[in-house]
Image 1 (cartoon, rainbow, N blue to C red):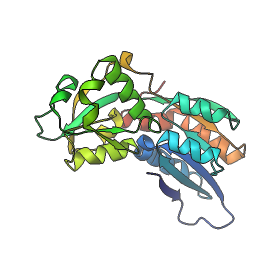
Image 2: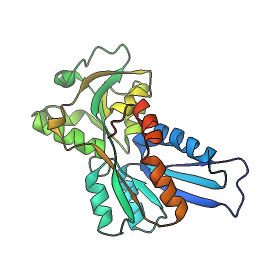
Image 3: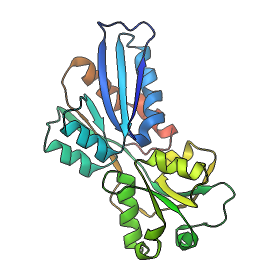
Length: 237
């Protein structure tokens, strides 16, 4: 699911500048809050967000969808996009953790080891959702895949996985720690060891070189923005 959102000051006019951000769905809340702070000092700027699975966003941009800045939850998707387009600036913005969540008061699944007891498990589609790929790697390394893969319910991004759990449609789901912390109706029952999957990093890159794009990029890399990301559970350097 691609979610398009817009943030701007109240008095933005047709002549004002627009910045288009394609970002991983797991950044939705933190990135919007950080951007609200940026807009307070830039009343003449409109920020348009395109949130979704990193793989889906990458394909959209390769096919010509406009974007000034990309922030993916996968170094692989970031590097693959770089084969088609050139980044003006690029860097590592954040890190995250992979966790197992269940609906509140659900005692069917209490840890990764007890996933064999589940009837349904929500995971991201590995081909287009980095969290799904990390889950796939983890289950493979734990020799769990063959025991639980017939229970998988696939979702188009981590927020969709989270909603399956919130609505009690599955016994468990695999999401990022930051997503789980935004939702009080789920419980983190286990954390996947980092050795089980590729590092969960969020690379950021600019695709255009306007002054406002450069300024927004530098703002997101600033300590002021990082403090907001930390509040949502992201790891920052």
